[in-house]
Amino acid sequence: MDNVIVVNSGLIVSIVFAIVCASLAGSRNRHRVGWAILGFLFPVIALIVLLIIGKKQPKA
Image 1: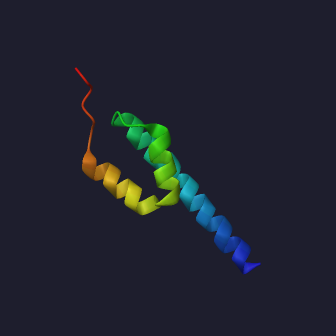
Image 2: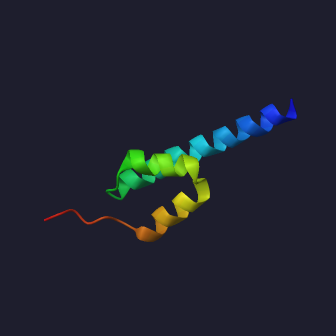
């Protein structure tokens, strides 16, 4: 029973990070789906990288 709780907690955390990364990526003109996947697979690392790289400039 304890393993089920740990796995479910991990999934919930990963889903939350994926949503946060997708939302932040959209506000910074970056690809939402790609960052959502990265946020799900590598939660903290993806969020830190997304915060560091900043906003993408639109092509002229």
